Length: 278
Length: 151
Image (cartoon, rainbow over all chains, first blue to last red; front, top):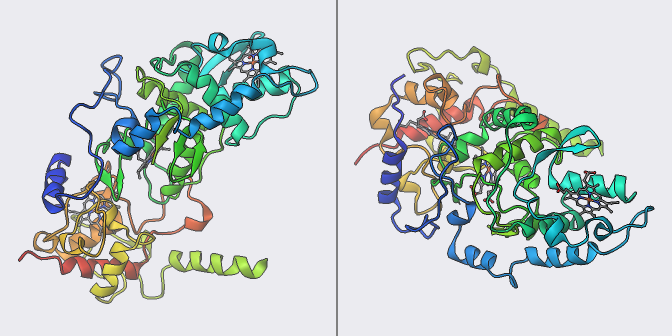
């Protein structure tokens, strides 16, 4: 048919004319971007969601006393020492000082771990529950409940500022490929893929929302819209519901694979957990 | 319990099934980027079309398109697609109809949803089975777009 595909830049220029001054967050001139690790990487510059948010949102994230994610972290610092479960252990019984034992975890998960010869692909949440059920003989924590969110923040926060560095080769390769395929697969009644928004149009507005690259480096995150802290998989779920798609289950294999793919899309970004978003 | 479920199901099926005299989604033919005849056999209503164009649960076209004449009454127009000001000067009703029904026929890579297609979709919850817009809504939006002419 005759309808031409207007270039993004043309549409953007036209919009700037059409509604010149409406108050919204633009990327500042001095936004921080990271070089992709190689030429095959899907992005030409890797940008944290932080850069797309307003000054107020960014200021709240930067303030360790005001950032609500730190309340959960403080509770988790206590939980770390508390005995729970039939084995009579706390996290500290086996892992001692988390600043040391958990260094290098937050920036490298999800990953394939070796459990007595068995290779298991896991993220931090599922690993914590493995420790609770197998090593502590305690009940699993529910995804997205405060205990789990707080402990995940605690583990990831040890690596705050460290560059994301997930492995996608070797044992991780099939999970990475699966994640990449899911990222590019159209779903829902609106028939969109993650890539349609976060790859093709980041930096632009979709209605009132300033589209970012959909990076994972700040999760779990405090969101104004949730009036609380939520997991990465909760965000995946929300994005899928918005395009009228049936979300995959939190902690399940599809979201784990997507999580790994997102890690690689953000390879080199500093871990920001706990971030603040609108 | 039952009486709570039935209306929801009924609403969902209403949007799904083509009414008598309408062209069903599977029978629509896009020829040379156009659909010549109205999907309902009647011209649409521009006033209703504007509501369906704007409605977040209907077309939600402003998610991606700017329409300057709506800036006063509707905040936040998206910038994903081209502005639709003067679109009726460029395209015929038949071309606009095809763009709304299934823009992926012209451009398979587009982000713009196919508003009157119900096949080839993945992981659609039952509540959203069927087309996004009804044949009537498509025609009404075509009529509304027909009013978007240059000065």
